[in-house]
Image (cartoon, rainbow, N blue to C red; front, side, top):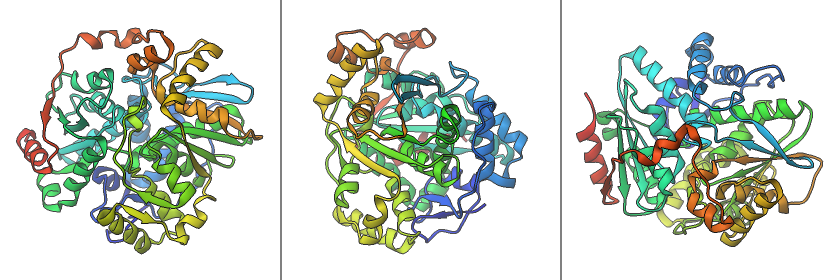
Length: 460
């Protein structure tokens, strides 16, 4: 299977090269040349079994089935729950999928643990090394640090916005003690961090010099890995039952993974609602057909404080009929003006994609955390609360509703305390986190500074 760029000016590549590259050379995002049709998950399959089948469907003969199975087994061995992504019932026809049983208590672990195993295996086989970079609004950096710490063939460089993530989120990325993990705190917001990462990839000479790769949600392996828990949810709740997924969303990668699962035949129909906070770019995209760059505002759900959802590009490519020239023109215009009205070729079919979006205010988020505690006795993180609020307030349907619980409440103890008056202690398995020594460098939000840091700190 070949992977093509959403902007149409990059040569098709195989699965492994698409994953190692992250971003396509023309600035676009990789998608499969055609959607594989994958047998839905069965009720007796383990999570590892389903993951191995789905990844193998995208990799085809590039990776032997037994190699993919071993990669998946290693990736999920560290999860605290054997189901990896267990479902709990929260009310009539309502469920929550807990995606926080990985080593850093966030859904990003599900994909990142697999990517790290995949990268280290492939690079070891090729006798190569890579510098991997990511921008993080909170959870991606910690998940990447935990997954790649000590990797033999990868140096990891994490960019995060200084003092715009929770202290616990920061600790997960700054306390690994691994020589191959580097943390940069930038004096700006997440969108600037992400823009710098994209700028690094746009410099093709630097990409070659640094052997650069990326593991943000622009990386196809992230999307493929996250599609697995949609498939296992369908199997657990009934192969023929229609499901409605409510997905707390910032960069839209998690929601897009549900769309991908549906395109590959893993779901019995698909409805996905992107639940966003006061950074409501996605809601404006769906309701008004307008893509506008705004300064991200701080909210109680900081991992979603994003004003440019990168994965929307993949959806735009699909609903336009895979018109790469049209997509390229839109993003060229957006790069220049930061404000684009989507053409009818995209805005028309967009609302037939199965995806939509709704925004939640800061006050509603905090009130929802209290309401869930009163109803269930559970403390939930503010991102999950954005999802449960949307699920509570959208019209009822015949579909079972599944809210993706994206992080453990203990990652946001200050916000939990503010909202509910309750403490949110870390689980025993990570209780020593607060005592670990932090290592990070505060730097200017300047691409040249970041470029020099990467070249200086690479291992040969």
